[in-house]
Length: 187
View 1 (spheres, rainbow, N blue to C red):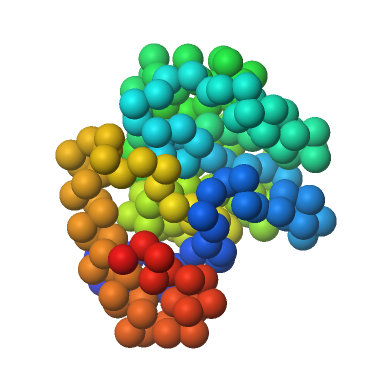
View 2 (spheres, helix red, strand yellow):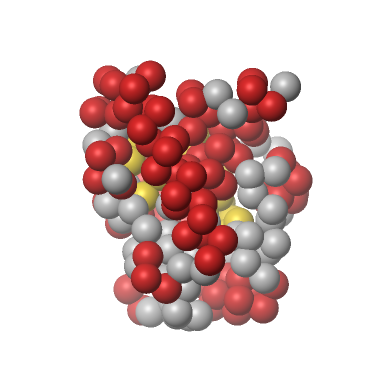
């Protein structure tokens, strides 16, 4: 069973971007996506910041204006995630335990209506938590570059080392996806 879970294909994102600001949210909406599950740390803000600046607040408002329901899903603790989410007026799940399914299921309980898996998209900066977890749930996943690696916690740094090994496997097993997604930026 563990071999099935750790198949390389479960770590391949649908798309890869430098930042969340580079994603075409109008196109995502037209593709039928309605819910965005968004990681917090190093996806929206670095670990050493706690509140969004005006630009980030406006950015999240613009995503909501397109028509998306946004839910912050983070492995970080409640005070940090709640403080940020309250500042941008979105739902959240703290201590999500990604890549386990329980956090993703809790996040979907925060949406106003029931959505099909094809309508959900995860945005995050880690293969080992965000991509792998969303793939396990059957959601699409958009991978972004981490904002600031220097401030990451020890466990995230450990995940980055494992991620590097997985990127090498992706390059070997899925060279066209590796090249198309420009994943070499992450090595």
